[in-house]
View (cartoon, rainbow, N blue to C red):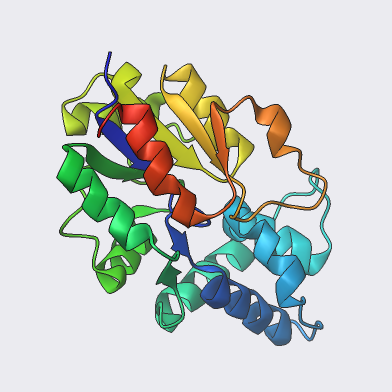
Length: 223
């Protein structure tokens, strides 16, 4: 079956949102009289969402629950801050144009809540152009469950086996494989030190957005 659908994860794959999210984390830490987390360290935790960033900033281990009020404060600060420093990764605008040129439909599947996803996409100029959008609270299940990807494929009107899913976290590859999609690991994204994306069993690894175009042409069989 030819590959005619391209689905993106959002943070760390389609968009570089770390500048705004790390700033929110450090604002939250300042409110708690804690020192800021260096950007170079916090950036690599962005794909793990507010909870992952809070765990990092407050030194919480994975087995310690995050206070819901602290998580809500993070979300409130992020919503109030806006997305002034978030950008599409270099050349991804041209990748989306390429999708149109070769007849591949595209969409976004993210674990980010809808209330935070849509304003970000609106700022980036993508809200009215994406052909499928599944946020973290669209369904009861989130990635690594394949259900969100399967829903996005239905929104595109394409069988999941005809889709490629691109993400920068292991859960993206796990969800894509479970949905029967081809998977691409974005190693230019928010990969934590020690995370072995080579072992995620993605069909391909992309270390820079500029390499997505040739790979997309190859995977879709376009000329």
